Image (cartoon, protein in one colour):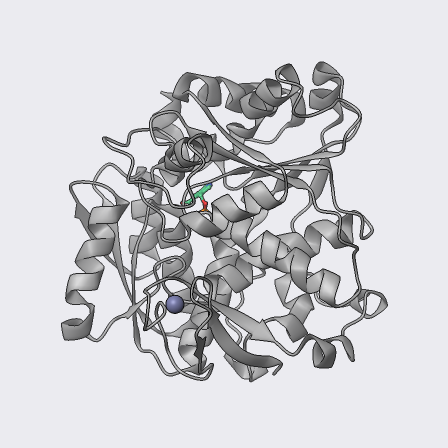
Length: 387
Ligand SMILES: Cc1ncc(COP(=O)(O)O)c(C=O)c1O
Ligand SMILES: [Zn+2]
């Protein structure tokens, strides 16, 4: 298709595109996919999107798969951007939106990344896929691997929400529960993958999950008629969605679809695991591992992210910020958003609401701005957190 090469996000070393690759062979940082965007824009125009398929593959020309036959799809993406009128009224904001990612296959935005990653793994000849996960990525990988007819090996902390474990088992994955955190699960995959012949689908350790996630940025622009919002509030663990959107904005600007203006990118984390918030406050480009990470918002329990510098770069370049909220705040917010809007958010997504209140209180967001909260998953998968 239009992929030219893979580029290391840190040292910029070029890597060949048509091979199964993990991080940069020189410096170990994430590889990003680069496209011939001029070629992409010949068939792909804003107007030509009308009538295209109602999933993320509508942006086919800026996605990595070569042969359509390799696309592994369960209908991911093209989720609604809900105008949160009642919640907005409570806060005095006219233009408050919720991008509702709970409406994806497997009920979270992880479906986007896994659709792209599994399609590429299939195209490039992988047979066995392995992933460490906080829960939702596992559910998504299991589903897409099943759909592709590939074997799937999942490693999750033993206190991952039960729904995530059951969904993986019921979609044919081999599940290992481990004591510790997602980082321990990642180390286990890294230790065993060569001997087992697994392709490691850890976020940002393979180049394509971010390609699926970047469609969040394309959709947001398209749904808002090509005018990006003023503020995006995003619950950040590994940061793939935020990094992906930031990449999408650059691509769209190069294609002439949007101008140079960018939303302020706001990372929200749980106070029990806030490595990005801490690094942002300390003015650091890389985040140190957050000790004793703990939060019911399991997707935010990522004490160390390989893409930390990309998250921090985007936040700073956009004049955004990073802030944390307590577990009590994010659990309370789940009920508040649910009652006001009828959306039963994942606790990670609900964390955006107390974050917004803090921004308004600190004068870092204004009531007359257009603000988008990301509900990244479905509350129904976290029943333990609400008992
Ligand atoms: C519901 C939910 N929200 C947010 C996140 C964090 O996502 P990211 O890795 O893109 O920061 C996760 C990750 O597991 C998640 O499951
Ligand atoms: Zn590198």
